[in-house]
Image (tube, rainbow, N blue to C red; front, side, top):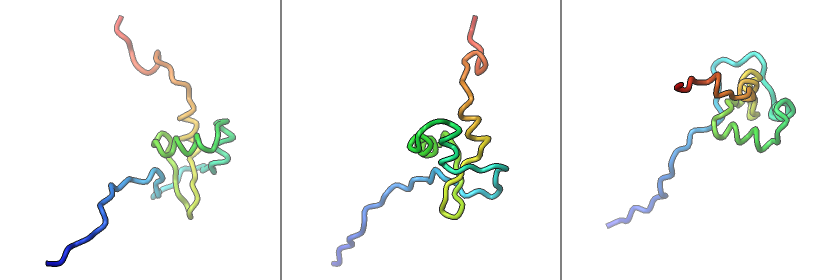
Length: 86
């Protein structure tokens, strides 16, 4: 009786970078996003990996929409986000 030896199955992980059907108006490189946000390369990539920042892959290069980056950088205010009981 033959023994079937196969590789163990691995979980499929969805990519953090999407291939868009329509592109935003202004796309930035990771370096440009770093300069605007004043953070390190690793921070931008972490935001992309955690899906806090949407990224687009174009020809093997990662691009970020300026509007998405600016939205992420907006300060969070509990007063504006929800109402607390009085």
